[in-house]
Image (tube, rainbow, N blue to C red; front, side, top):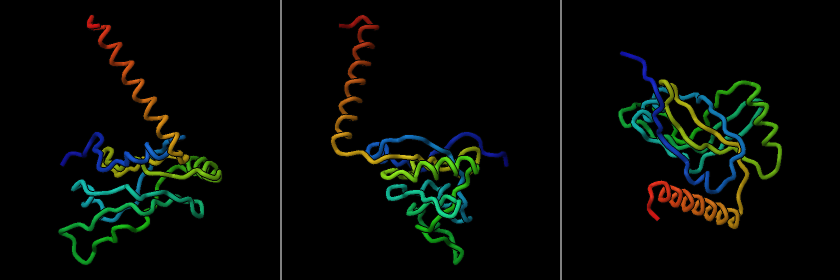
Length: 158
């Protein structure tokens, strides 16, 4: 069978981009068991409560929910177990230095297969206040309105 190519998104954490101000984004591999991979290939996962944590020179992904594989037996995995992230040592050091600041956390943004390997996109993020969220929404709406007017002007419709 030919090797899988391209990117297949399994789960996204859309709320993270709303609740946090994203400072830096990293792509990391994940250490998974066989039934976890099969469950992910079925397109089942949730990043809602997930976060990453720096511990003893390693990064761990916690509270990610990968449901039990339906056809699995006694070898099935625990749905919310901690999963090790695979990054280069210089990236781990950069993340560790960034997380030392107060108010900074590691948030998973998306979980996907890239060329057959399970990957997670994690972000160094700073929490937003409610007024920051409103400001970001107003900014996005004004940009959308400006783009719409530019498009109308280019089409000759006023």
